[in-house]
Length: 211
Image (tube, rainbow, N blue to C red; front, side, top):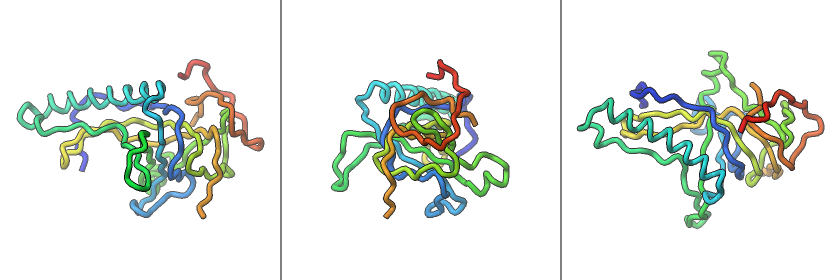
């Protein structure tokens, strides 16, 4: 169980680089592993992409600050057991071989609790031109090119003595849509060539220097 943060570092809203969607569930909360429901997506990225490198560096800086502050709070003896969790996971193919790509995970957890508190329970979705998509937003198939926004939240897990980051998912931009075969403001994005929903409500409240 995560303890109260023993450090002063705050989390931050972060906008991801472009990547490929994997198991993107943003409409109906999934209750398979969380009875209270959660929305989630994986983002598969090329670690050699300069934008991905910059993103990883930003996340790792947050973890480093949280780690240092945690160790200082716990004291030298207990600090020796504290470890840092990676801000991403490696991707493996069906045969268990590494693909060379990395995966970032984003979740909006405990949807029923959030509804009771009156907190946000939906992912704001826009198309490539930042037009806001409503209830008719298309399902996002694996391999779609997307960008996401999440709150990078540093944590310390006392039971495992791990310092890491969780991503609280809030927004998504669909840049190139691969059809699914399941057989608050959106100014965190920039215009992209790609998927456009002609029936969407155009969003105009963007700052030119968001990135």
